Image 1 (tube, rainbow, N blue to C red):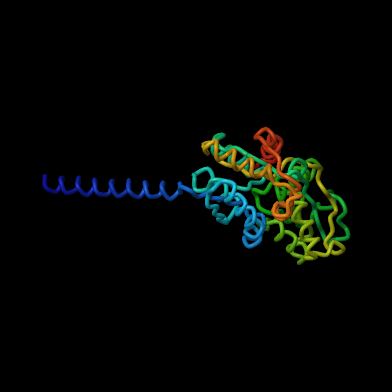
Image 2: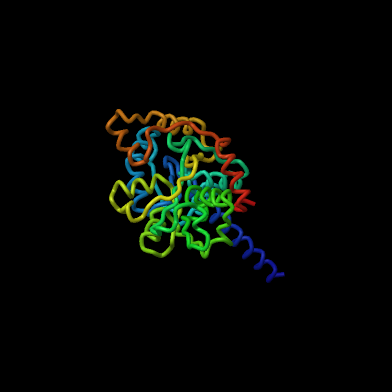
Length: 292
């Protein structure tokens, strides 16, 4: 009987410890007065933080909250972070929003998108003079960005399939660089014959003279599609959702402070968005076998 009593006591202590740990974890995931923000890692972490800093300061003033930006290791971590309440707001691509929406069973909501995200595009690039159209990629090597990237994988794959090119069987090899700038580096460095990335990062690298478009050139640009957005969980307090949305919609390029924020975000302005805008992305993901 004594041994049974000791065992019960130990079990009770372990259970109590587990409850305390679980409670601590829950508290760590809901920090009062803090807006926990992240973004899909479609560029290197230093660049993402540089781009977000003025926007974070602006949102802190607008909401009265401390805004903390936390880089994530990969696209899946950004989805998991929002769905499991470790993040409050995330900069998603269209496909990662679709993944988060499916993973949460509809418990996330996109608030705003940039004006350019209504008709976003991807570009295919190469240094090979023999590649001038999608069909020329047969038997060649190609780098996408991240597997979960809308503009660096899903939509380029979708347009390849539409051109009757199956990347998995018609190309010599496909690779995943993990980020758009890394795709450009892979093509420029001769690691692959061609690459696909989002047009915004491509134009930024060209403008910054980090790539020579006479050497690494665009040979195909996709039609437009809905892409990036800022997404929150649907259980966020309505008043906070409104403050965040209003702050984005109030950004005005004629205001010098706002102009810097918009320039870093590659936006003329921000617009309201809704889940329905990403139905075509969801359909493309199903058709490409990337969403079960």
